[in-house]
Image (cartoon, rainbow, N blue to C red; front, side):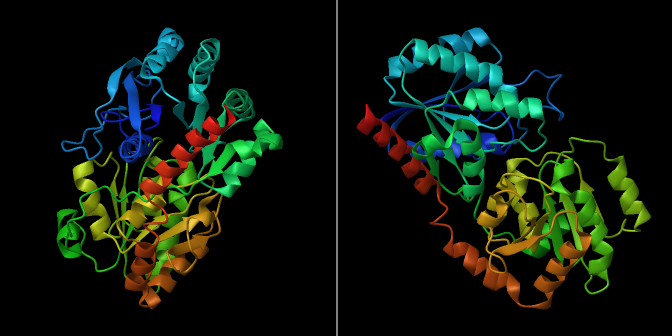
Length: 384
């Protein structure tokens, strides 16, 4: 059985990357012997844009018993980390790549790993080019990624971005495996009417914007689309997620458009035990990105069998079948968002689209991703 080391966040840290890493480890442990090294500290408090990087969930759904004694804020800890990996006799080290913040830490680690003739490193690239990037961030990120041995992306679009940085001669070192669907929340059915009552929503047609509120998510354009939708259908918009920016422009826009009775703004982190309630309340999940590499929110919505309206940017078109599992719309276009929502409510699309999403669960499974990671380890065996 292959031995692997996975280094990354898990509970009690919040966010999609923690859930992703935990679920990947869970799937890998069915196939491999996995050393899961997580963090005692992840970000300095002054740097994190939210209230805290700790997950407030009372019943977290992703617990994979890591070794959480590793201090990710200590360069010395990163320098010593290859020793712990050597004791496990790992054949591959799996690292999540998300943002330029990790450049100095991964640089120290990869240099130490090479010094000790350690196992190869596989970067799982959540965002080759991060959401709110700059020339400096891209330059630094490319320098660290070039030190990796193998790479996994979730779209052909991101694979192309990566090859621009590491060189096309290394294309055989890059695997594309689609982002798994997040289907790990409690599958027990919650009646939509009950869910809406819990959330204080009194409307038969409910749209959901879910996740951190950031400029690139396109919330302002969704708000601007609501009056256009209301010309045809009575709808209510639920906005659920912690804001990483000033909420005043959104509140002012809601007031300007007279949407106080049509928009519920829950600007706070949603704990695991409440996630299913929000998705049960909604017919359609709308996240009209203006820029993005991929979207964990799309995969979360599909885990609840909910179709999406999403900005057609980055690698997202590879994750959504137009008219079957969701609608791709032009970025920054309230009209395009409104047209997609009206199209959804004008037909009997809900149940049909849920069926199409159901059919994709196996294709976009965590087992499939674990197979892809294990295949990289076998590939390295063959070249050793």
